[in-house]
Length: 597
Image (cartoon, rainbow, N blue to C red; front, side):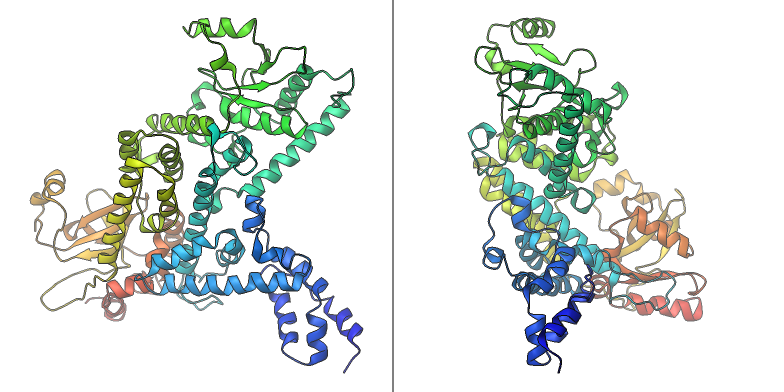
């Protein structure tokens, strides 16, 4: 046995790693001798391991106390132990979701409720190794592709649920009361609807903080006085220079041809790739920087273009800032400029107050939702991003009573059972009247249909002749697109109207032939008659192309045998697909062995 301080010195050298490889060494030490256990349970040893693994928590994202961690906030060992306990629960629930479709969304609901406390564990699962797509053995968890798919889906649900709960705190016209999110924070939540493709509020808040600090340094180099107590303090000059700083950082008015780009509405994009953006987005950045510098700026719902309101010291007029038009003159006078602007818009300047008063998060969110819908009108329906549409739908449900509009929007979103059981379930209690009833009915119908589908099995029998199988790749005989079979019916189950529209009766075998549920390489979901299916080879390159183009593919498949290792190449089934089509994998193996079935 070695002295305790020597054990501690040795364990301090154990490197921290996000995948917990270093922490496992400490955990193993806890299970050995009394001396090693005493050394390994020293709180300071666990700090680096905690910091590198756990980047997010419900507390940090919401800026609210979290009882589970506050009890142990000065003991990194206890912190790590508590988070690791939650990780184990989360990963067991994830295993259930992967293994079987029945009960999947009950597990998802529990996972979503654990919020950002399990984000890191699931995020790490999304980065685990996956099989090489040639049928060879690699160091990967069973059903790695499918597991990664569901981990990512749950993270997306957690992110959306967080936004819904925070927006549900808005009151008093959206003006923050210390408990509800401010305008700046409420807008950051828009990016939550993009899951891992977006950024969490903490990441975006940090990005805005860095931008504010950079602006402070820039202003100080410009010898701009930022102390309101000093006589040199010039508020209009400071606001003008903030606009100049934003311009130097690449922020500015978007080109007219790109004004309706859907990406202009979401912070994780207009803070990075879409810095040339629309007025409301630029005002969001301006207000964040100004408040960081001690300037009480707020958005103004001015007709046509969102402006920023800045209150002046006693004895001076308040003024507005036109961030979008900052290249000309950003400072807008309430006395001289606003009446002229209103007249140009055909609005009599009778009641200036309603057009120049600062507003909170709710009116701005609703305006953002309407902007998102306007962008949709400029795009073909196939290009509409479900994430963006969900953001607009949820905002309208929360902040308006426009039930016909919301009903129309709901008809265009994918009411996936995962959504219905997680963030949409948390949205329902926040609604009133017709909105709540509409959403409850829509979600209930989706979940009931899912319960029926989850237990449905499609066995092959001698009476049912199905030529092809789930996992097969083909080219459409008429339209030449590449598709992958994810399911089949022994005959056409589509409505008569769909059959008429698709000219099913003109097919050689009409509707009384197998029809296949298909995911096409262009991202569409199709229903294809057997007459139109021309089998093709699944190569490694095509498999990779399919995974990139069809993100939902790993729900149905966990790996692939690719041509020429396999006779024709095929996807290997996920547990869900194996249950629903129990004979198809064996059927495909027979083709591999004999070339015909």
